[in-house]
Amino acid sequence: MIEHGEIDLIPQEADGQPLRGWAMIRNLHAPKAAYFYDVAERITDKAIDELFRDLRRQAIEPTQNLFRHDREALDGTRWSAICFAHHRNPGFLDPPPRVKERVYGFLMLVEHAGKVAVLRSGLDLTTAFKSKHLNRIDAERVEAALAHSDAIFEKMRLRNLSPSKHVLRSKMLESEDLRNVVGPAGSSRFAPQGYTLRRDDGHYTTTPSTGRISQRSDTAGHEELVPWCVGMIEELENQNAPVAPFLRTFARSVSLATYGDRLQPTFFSVNTALLAEELLDEHGPLRLVKEGEGGPVALSHNETAAVLDTLGPSLSVRTVRKELRLEPTEGRRRTLGKLKINKGRISLRSLDLAAAESLTVEHKAAALGQDPKAQSLRSYINRESRFIVLFQDLALAYIDGALYRDDGFAAGGDDLLRYLITERALADAVSEKGGLTPVQTTFDPTSVFGVVVNQIARQDDVLLCDDLSDEWADFIGLNTTATPPTVSFYHAKHKGLSLGATPLHEAVSQALKNLGNMALPESEMGRKVASWRGVYTKDRVTSAIRRVIRGDIATVPEAIGAVRSTPDMMRRAYVVTSSLSKQRVSDALADIAAGNPPSPHFVQLYWLLMTFVSACSEVGAFGRVICQE
Image (cartoon, one colour):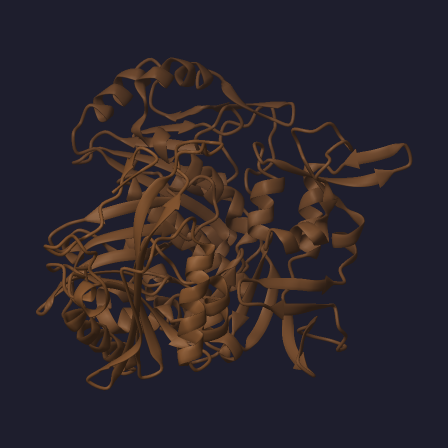
């Protein structure tokens, strides 16, 4: 049949009559791929009839049904299916012209044990039917159904959980067995979005967040598809199936909707670490503005840091008459804000913090006071989800607008401890760089800079102070005599002891954005060598400390070239801080493993440091944090 210059193929019997009814359903050959849902409200004959009628009403110029079956019985299971042709606008033409493209749509529902499998092509469930009758299935149940302990993962699509702009956002991995090529350092900050695995009964692909499961096989008819859907539903019902240990090395993104009333918030905290990246970083996109006597005034770096300090304390979450109230963790009980948990996000209904109300967030690209999208700091924190919520389930954390599950963290987070190296001299540090005088030739031994030079980097035969220039690190060290030779970037910071992320944020951010420079690109060396020819100057005080701490400026280019040309050159990125104690971190992790809730600030710290380690692994570098004992 030809319509409007199109060829429309309708399957026909030998006598030229179109196939219909049971005859046509036997021509169905579809892949074993379905979306699985929990039934929210009982599905009736009337509901299926309304669904199929709505599908035809919403379609453009639908043909007669090639087949339609409403809640047919097969071995105790109900199945429904519909198929018809319809027009749609070509996706590559805008606005759509009179010409339409003809497609054949197919939709099939299999009902079993309180769940529904949906197989489709060219048609989809209506919004009304889905919202009334179906709930998205828990992603963890999809994982348990497919990722058995003996499963071999062959392909995986990953998204980085860190909101930092300096890290790899996503990646695709593929191997005969990913367990042999993916280490814990490279996986810990990535959440699987979808994966392909093989088991004894075949190859499967799934996207847990959408409930989609497919099996690699030949296409099948309805009499084979229905039992396949039933089999998958029964696997989804198995609550005790152990998940593959390989999958548990990842922190997984999970849906708020799947947890529902089971979510019991315990603590709330503003994500000051991420706000610091946006507001304090030299290249950060935002600024804080206050209203001065003569008009809007931008806050200085120190004033902004002070504001973030006031936002730092965590608040407890208490349920009062179904309200989630934010209250101080110590002192007089009073309501400082309220949370609301929706299906898609957690929002701040209120936040009574003076600093958050009296200040405005603006984009630096706009003239001061002229940003049309300016908003109060409180509104910005809410709209951009710049906060963390913790729950009674210690494996869960809501961070920057998404809910994550990290079983490794709840089990004690031993992975983090492996990347902490202790240096006793950091306990004596009282400043970052120490005081400077014109006659000073070395950094104060009680400064973090002094500890780096005298203790941590003592094996480097070339040591360059790169601070306060177009810096890649505070110090760059070369060990040209080691086998293999090493390049080390040292990022040093001094703060009081803390189990929060804020004291470390600046150093980690600097380390992340300079990972590419650890290759010592030849095109940059001329400029960098020139910057190392002088002495160290800070706050207009020119000292007698040579920027080439060890080595000879005349031979530095040659040494860098020799190390760069070594095929097995080793790169190490060190964050050196006096603000962290490995023992205190170990004690905090032990408390978590014992079932005690962590503070939101410690969760920030854990995620920040594991992000740093993971990002280093992505570029073939070794990331370590050197801290107090």
